Length: 114
Image (cartoon, rainbow, N blue to C red; front, side, top):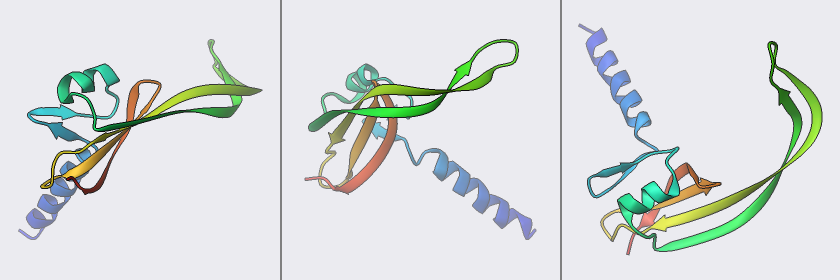
């Protein structure tokens, strides 16, 4: 009987972590990996949007084939970053959605809304 409370705690922790990066707009759930247009359809326009570009430098290139391999190379990748702010009101935390090339990569929380 001592293992039941431990199993319950572990299941609760795993479940909370699984949804830690999700948030809801009304009855619709927003998750990592979604596209901007899907989130706009579910949540409407954000309160604030910031957009900038980053240049990322890679050091190898994956060559496909029967035996994929990496070869040394200098790669430049241009990434458009967008950070959207959803102010959900004074009773809820502000959500910040970070997109890279139109795909949701992270969801973070701020202070309580206004």
